[in-house]
Image: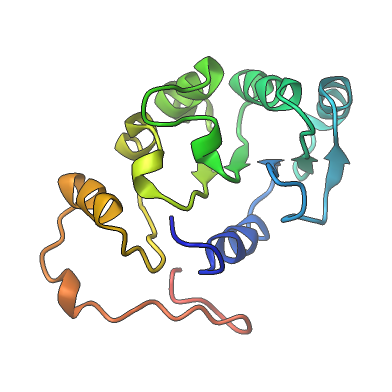
Length: 177
């Protein structure tokens, strides 16, 4: 979570380089490379059918309308042992709406080895189903009062004011692992 240019996608891209069997919904169509790019539901289904038994693949779905994201989430409900990355996840799971297949992935995907990572600018714009199922949340330069209150409602913020800011290092190792 965080404002534009604070490192959300940079962090996500770094984490993706450490994963195998990755499905990426590149909502704005310019954040990821290094995989097979698909632009329609048929191409997504066809390519996944060819690689689903492989130990390592990356599929990058770049939607031009609403059909590909819906197909992407439906495909994810049938996948096993994959990492799923959703850029601009608040577009698919706002406070009062959520794609039905995404809801299933968030609640039950772990039973099938599905790990999901989402990037959004505003914490309060993401459905509580997503945040309630998070193992961890990274908030980059979040300062909007509604977002801070949203995060405070379900996080232990004791000592937060003393926490040193995370410094992203483009080269070398990151401080996360």
